[in-house]
Image (cartoon, rainbow, N blue to C red; front, top):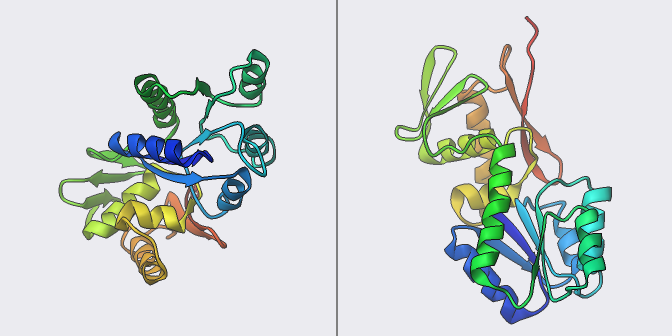
Length: 234
């Protein structure tokens, strides 16, 4: 998962980030609530770890805005020194999925993150670690081959990685940065055009958006791309 960490204690934030990376996740640190909220229009995260007492906009207010104003459904886990029962109940009632008390206990923390990850995986399309079929497209990760409409198309390594990730996140808007990190492992203006070219090739090779296609790949202005299911007329 790609995880956002809202934590103004630098040492603890780096410790949590390192621990998450050891578990195979990627993470971005935000030191105040305002910075995190500003990032949401351009970044895609799978899970949020929020401290309650952070500068500018506190973690509870960030939670409320994400759930009520932005209608976000991604899991949110609080990691904070606040152990007052009324505040824990308030956070859970406002939409937090879990609550961890500092000082951090790494095994417990890891178990809670893993539990949240399982909930994400249940609601998302299947991962592409093995051959899968989505919307009539069958993906073979061993050969980078995609079969649809009785034809086989072999994609390049990057095309396959991009296409399989888009299909695995069907109907979810994905930021340009998230796509670049997932496929190329880094971001930057020099890769932005590369992403657009690969999107164009995927549309063409997989006939996405063509007559009778069950999928449509659209640009989300100022943000990224979204692969959507369509329902062709009979």
